[in-house]
Length: 228
Ligand SMILES: [Zn+2]
Image 1 (tube, rainbow, N blue to C red):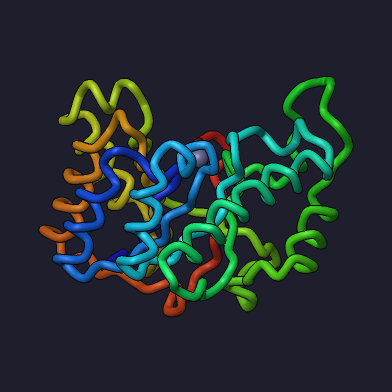
Image 2 (cartoon, rainbow, N blue to C red):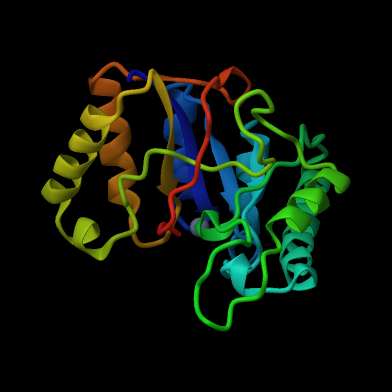
């Protein structure tokens, strides 16, 4: 597997601009999925992503499990972040290319999380996304409008943040075991893990991986169940 669609969740952070500078320098495409509460904390960093020409997607406002919410609560989470993203585009005088979304935890609203879980809102949420103009990135390979992932090196885990060698080993094994020609890689733009971004990108470049732009991406994109 040598082709990667790079996706960076839970942006922006205090490290976003360093990452952007590196990505731009190496002309590597990526999608940033924006968490609304972080956009409010780091508005300048959100504008920097947009100005640098990277597509941004919606990743909810406060990162709840959508399976625990009503459809109205889900739509509120989405709309709050849509407002912040649209506002940032307005402030930069740039046109938003498309609306895309990745659900927090990849939770499409159909998970049985506890005995208190509501009945599935999965189908209603997909209808909501279609009616509200969310872009379907891979209509030929996925029936879902939201964007999942299939490569998660777990850059958010405390054990990986504390032990870089363990993270490197895990990353190498993950990529080695992955049989498809291309995959969607999930990284996170948290305040706590900037070293793991650098390590991941250096590893991928040293091992001659190439990076796909979202439009080139040919594979099914399926979410993992446990990642933030
Ligand atoms: Zn997340």
